[in-house]
Image 1 (cartoon, rainbow, N blue to C red):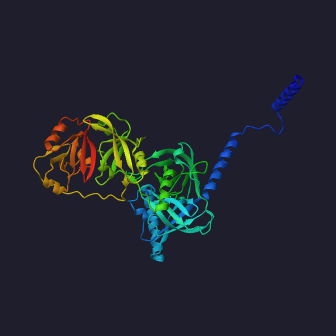
Image 2: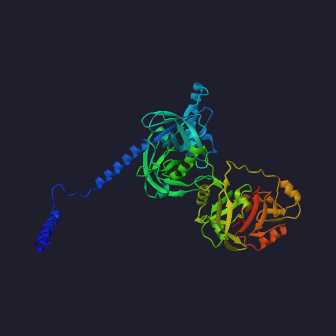
Image 3: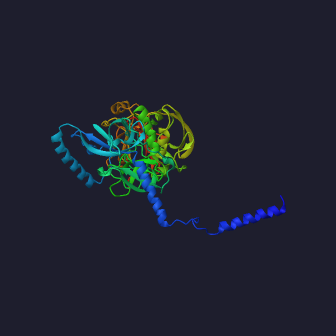
Length: 501
């Protein structure tokens, strides 16, 4: 290129750069003000509410007049109302039911209401089990006023997830956009949409307060892995969606801890989707299980005092005799630290890992085991099985008087004779049998009962009251002693400390 021509091009580019730097009317972009940003956020909430509400339904439930679902104390998923409000609500419903019963006879009365979301265009609605439990009739209402009869396709007790099926009759349903609850972060915006107190399509917002909440309900057998939110939810929100600012469902609103507390809980959508998909295809959700009782090691100072050398893991507190683990080398007081190489540090993590496995699948557990005061990591193979729907405990039997006993820590133990084995219905031939438990003793508080068979004390086998006494003599009762025993066919372990400590 000629020098003169190149110089001309450079001059033109330089002039253009100067022009770009000069302020030009209509081209200058102003920095948005805080008020503009607030308006944008406001519009975002409006758009999310309008978009998601098209996928939200109101679930109206009818029961026969004799049915009072709020009196069902066995249902742990009933909205956690304060006692005063709950009593007032029950009285109002009783009075209303009496009036309607006299007029309608045995015709079902629509006396309950919850929420739900459309998860499939063919007419499948995701909601809570406690919303539809015991329903004689179900009506599903959409925001545009259309109404359909619904039938329960399937329900899962442990997760409180249920699926309703409607016939859309040609209506095109707006399917909810499901997010990924694993990626949800604490602090994110959370928006709840539902029908609290029959106020249909109410929208409230707050934040994701916490994730992985468990032990919210006293029953440890239930699947409890909740998202906590301070978005205001109330009775009637149950079954409705908790969504993020992108309009994606991240949870199913399920529980509240008192009214106006800002503490609500939602089932993570990943879990709810897993259960609902199975309910749609199979009509039920069958879990894989090991048949063990478990507790978090890190949250229990008593266990950590005697199980040394490991900081994280899940303590096996009992092994049911009819469960898969009973056929493996797993023992009470073992600490499970991983499943097929994936680390687990909480009971809920272990439940989730096992639940996702196929029925009959072989697993390898990393287990930390105390043996005579020393810890060792071992591998334990166990094959999963289908979790039974209900486990019925064996009734306790009365103890009889026998000779030669040892009494300590509130326990009286005797040799496991043939007569005692027959009396208590025992099959074990090793160990000592508990014949008495002192009222108010540490043994009683730990749930040890007459008829239980103690097999080990501090990982040392005991087959006579004498051995039982000798092992206890060398133990530090103030620190705690590990007791392995069998109770009604279930292998367990407990830590007993000297009374008064």
